[in-house]
Image (cartoon, rainbow, N blue to C red; front, side, top):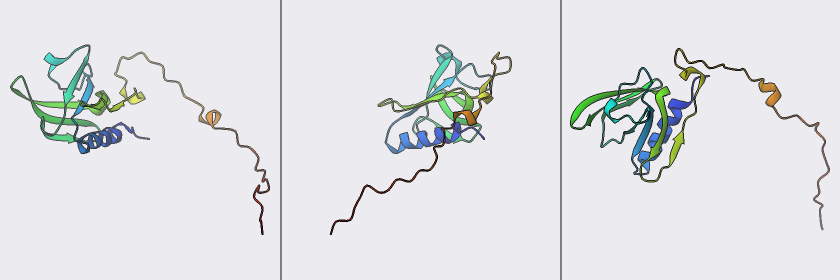
Length: 140
């Protein structure tokens, strides 16, 4: 299946905007395809205000989000792969979500072993159907 991250990201973005809050993204600034203002990176991450009043030409698809914004008065086109988005939250109350790492997000050169999981072993055991008589009775 495809990643659910872009769908969840759009849903949380819309929910935050609909509640008159300011959506902020936490982005992995070390992602090789991220085009961001590097002067604001702290600890390998950057927080971006993506509210409609802060950015122009905002676009989000299943692969990336992009927008125009000013940073210290300088215009810049920002482009962030969806896989580089670590979290989205409302500035006013912190409501939002954090995304977990997915297999397709691993950068070339990452030394991570992916293990397959036996999903049949995770399924709950089925109990035999045993019908009990109703505990209700008719009273006249």
